[in-house]
Image (cartoon, rainbow, N blue to C red; front, side, top):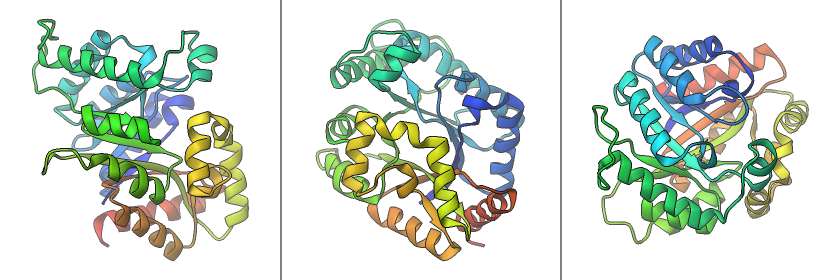
Length: 290
């Protein structure tokens, strides 16, 4: 299982901060850097800047909300960024959530499964030129991963995508929802399962969970996350987060690997710089076998 970093810095920080984190990912021997696209920077543009500065690191969107980009516009942007990165971009997309689409984006919400199927089909057509509208930028089409934590979207991802990206999902969701959806895929067809979750190596377990809840707990009330948290037996993402000693963190990562997760994207959230450093060091050691 590959170990990467997941960061919300694109939502609240500066592009220079993204560059610094991507550089640290490279220096630490970690596999990649994943980031969402919501109310802050355009993540794909930030990736073009960071990837130009730091070679060799995979950069993945987790995820681009489809309502923000018509398929042709996204294909054009992705092709441009992929050229800059030399093929290192992993494209995670998803329908987002009704509350965000209506209230934050000011757009109409449509039934997510049907809308996602249509979107992926059109995006793939533009990226491959099947409909005669191919974006003329060099390089192979970029594989698409879908944000998925529940059965219907997982089944669609298994049918039309090259992988899934999860948030606020544990090994039970990977093993009981994502993996079963892959049964009808052709033998040997690659499929990535990228699991993103908060993590902190610390002695202050209670305080860190409170900190994670304060930072991320608002999303716990979104309907799709309520379903997955209920399946995991967790009240919120803070309960599901990997928090504790190095041994506890290693045990939890082992559970993800056994479940079939191919990539763990670690969202480091700590109450102190010391704990943040310990977590970076733990993840680097895990990734490199040191």
